[in-house]
Image 1 (cartoon, rainbow, N blue to C red):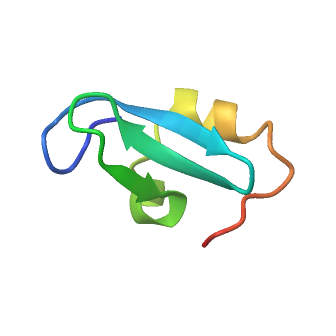
Image 2 (image 1 turned 180 degrees about the horizontal axis):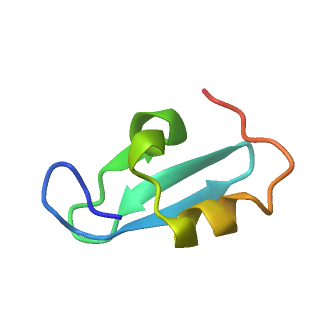
Length: 56
């Protein structure tokens, strides 16, 4: 997946109570619902390991 701002690669960023997508290039973070329509198969597989994702 690519960042909407800079075309950098997005990675899954976990913290205690949330899961976000973070750009490796510019550091911008997206909530999952902000990029849900653009999730690729690899990211969907990774996120499927979590029983639930809390939208904050």
